[in-house]
Amino acid sequence: MNSSIIHLEVVRFLRKWPWILALILFSMGLAQAMIIEPQTTNMQNYLGRVLGEGCYVNVMAFGIVLAVISGASLASERNTGTIAFLNRLPVSRSRIYWSKAIFLFLVGGTTLIVLRMVIGLNYFWSDAAYLTNNLARLPSFLWFVPSYLLISAVGICGSAMISNPASSAFLGLLSPIALATVLAYIKSESSWLSEVSLLPIFAAAATVLAVAFLALGGFRFCHSED
Amino acid sequence: MECIVHLESVRKVFRDTIAVRDVCLNIVGGARVGVVGENGAGKSSLFNLILGTARPTSGDVRVFGLNPHLHAEAVRERIGFVSAHHPFYKWMKIRELLQFVRPFYPRWNRDFEKELLESLSISLKKHVGELSTGMLARVALLLSLAHEPDLLIFDEPFTGLDAVSRDEIQRSIKRYLDRKRDRSILLATHHPEEIRRLVDSILILSDGNLVYDKPITNIGESIKRVHLECSPEASLDQVAMIRSQRTSHGWILIVHNWHEGMTSRIEQVSGGRVTDICPVDLEDCLLIRSEDDE
Image (tube, rainbow over all chains, first blue to last red; front, side, top):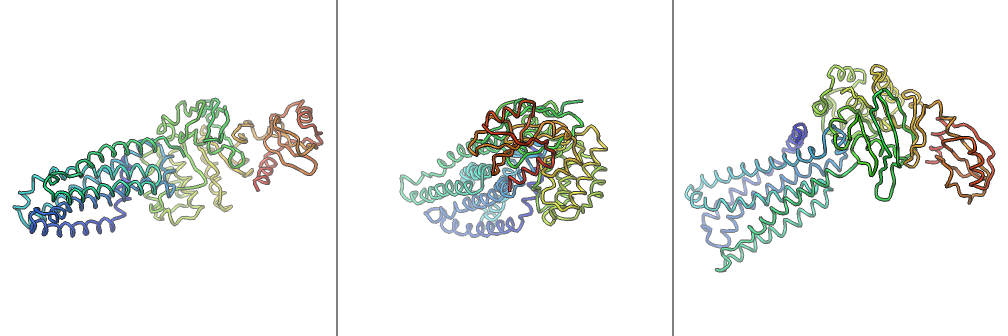
């Protein structure tokens, strides 16, 4: 990796601060709204569970948007032609690629931590007992990490090629995951399906796809020519 | 003299297009070489091979004794590159652009940078996006020279520039080369005055072939303009020529590697009659290309 390119990415990212601020406000507002419903429904019915899970979906949505903003970095470099400038600097393509990828994961990781803190504090302020009772649900949150990686990887992979196919792939993969998540909770009303969630399955698939996309994107970028 | 660029039977193929055909080339330290050829002749592909941004389909490329694709960092640290396009980040100020580029070059000379900023009249406070084409070219030149490269590769750097900017940039390049006698330049251009001012030998590329690699003064001995009267259907495939132009009576051919016996060979192959042979100078050579391009 190359510190100059990571620094460049940080500067580029921070230049988009109005978007980031809007996302944080939106996310915090949504997180606040989520507090009320899980408490009143106590996570015992369909609505309560969906709304409770909404926190995670919220985190994911926030992460997705950030990932798209930062993941589109290479794609925009291609569109504006600045990739030619980078490619002629004394730095290998693999270093460029991995510097951008590492920055993306740093952004993603930081986002998740900050959001968890915000949501956790909201819960704590509203009802400390709720937070304690739901600590067991924390591991399920971890499934969102591979999902997030998938989104990031698609961003990088796509940006290593061209932006439009990346967007299509991104939406194409995201839609079934979101649909499956909702379906899982609808079905959870029935007794034998109540413990079944498709989310882990998709998250596992996401992990595999993330690695595959990441490798493919890196390979294509590092072996492409001007 | 150290050989800084060595190409051995290098071929570059893009899908079904052969961009560079089995080119053998040696550039030594201190060489001032112009690269001439019509659009699509293979000049940029040749430069990309030297820079390591493209890999040869076959053959071997060595720059400073290294494979430029595998040792991109070590090779490009010693190269200054300018093309006709300057795809810098438009949102950056010149100061930020310099701050970004400097760390990539261990040999970056801050004093020389200041000198270039002054001589090229570049303001650090301006954004790249608000610069004129001429000013962008000056910034590109600054970035290519400030690390005092051993090899300059300029791929039509004067395209779209007004006479003042063109002259200013040429003077800066010449000043650098005069000061650093052991540094080399590969300059691709369509303008004979730039070639005469900055280089002393030329490479002529035609359809990916390297057809001339000698001092400018020897062009007339190796390359001839041949007026040929023959049937328009005559086959000229076996004649080693750079360009051909059809006329009402036959063809005008620009033939390279001229030697005794060439006249009879052309007449034999074409079934026609050679009516005139004259040496081609640099201007003629480029002019014919331009006419054909039009």
